[in-house]
Length: 300
Length: 97
Image (cartoon, rainbow over all chains, first blue to last red):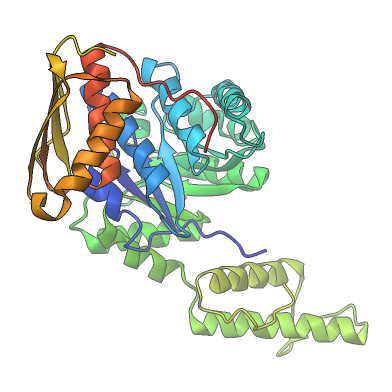
């Protein structure tokens, strides 16, 4: 099965008709309609109806659609779920997740709505955003809390406030939180999505951060402006050299298997299982990004 | 449902529509001011009347100031204004389509 890329998740304010209409045309892997922080308390009702009607009417093609609902402890959160689950088209992103019980409560409500509306049980997927010290410390139990979870994300603004610090250029204050979220996601076999970078005019700073989170192992990043899509995709797409090297590794392992050899070597270097696994992952990502032809076999 | 008080939803930004609903005794009155009235006036009228009918709104006055909104936006803004006027939450219940 072709891997679903989540390199870029574009935030779209839920009460902006023009942005909702055009959300998918810029080519981000996912679009996230926001009913939470970008919508004022007085406009929660109108944003909910706007996104609901847009989802029922507009064709967003292959773009993955996500809706960030309000906290389920607020009066708005359940109403958001009532509307968005019924569209049958979106992943529910739960904000400010602090423990497994938050995910479980959301899952119970989603299941109820699926049953009431005749949708297949389990068809609605979820993401959880971790935005506090407590959430980071509970990242593992959150990541394992539901089969519906396709990923977890770190939300840095609330998190650094909770830590009583602020965001720096290098992001040292986020290292522990990012690492916890990433490890939890990997252990649970789901995606890890990094936080937004707010200074849209600082492209070099943005690129620096994308290189960092890619190196840490994140699958992608939440973004706030279409201008941020290109740099992320560029940094995340494997280079020709990397693809070539990975293809050679896969060929070498196939050759060794054919010969019944237990020892695999390439250009005189031992190739062990983790090297093969990394090559396979890189080629999978290259294929999903269109940098590798569908018919190019790599034994994956 | 009866419109008992005035309410408004939406903005005057491009691609949006601002829709007012007000109480009235007689038949439903509809006023449209649109930047694309010539091409889409009839379509806007149809969407607004269908949406009002879906909420059983038969009396009152609806004023649409359209800035190039899609049908789904018109529908959303009118539903919001009607719910605000009736001080109710929109009922999303029922089966998914």
